[in-house]
Amino acid sequence: MIARIAKDFHWEMGHRLPYHDGGCQNVHGHSYRMRVELVGEVDAQGMVMDYFDIKAAVEPLIERLDHSFLCDESDDVMKALFNKQSFKVNYVPFYTTAENIAHYILQELLPSFRGRPGLQSLTVRLHETERTFAELSAQL
Ligand SMILES: [Zn+2]
Image 1 (spheres, rainbow, N blue to C red):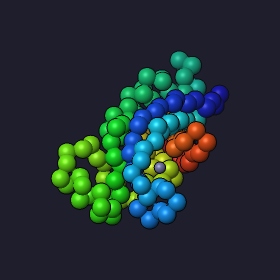
Image 2: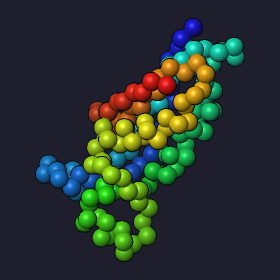
Image 3: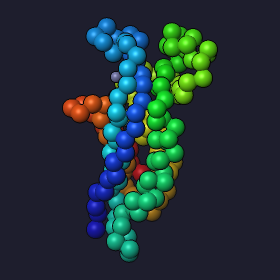
């Protein structure tokens, strides 16, 4: 039997899009919500994967991102500030759109799920606001 399971996570994080001219160029933050979804074979214990194991795999990344500023490495304005202050910041080599963050998270999580017997796919759905999300999947 194949089943789809999911666990939801949330964190607060600041960012900006330096190239944007519609408001997103300003420093601001979001209450990000993320659904981590797995499709796989239900095992003899009746599980695709233990929810506690999903949490253990995802939580270190959430702790790293929570109450940080996600800073695009090419954003010299913010880098100048963070070089002078000891704020919590994570540097990434991409514009911090929901699509790119979802892709980054998917790549960060894949090693924790690849190789587990029975799993078929991993999906990350990242909600930046109440009404918007980006979603990416990978085969396992
Ligand atoms: Zn934003």
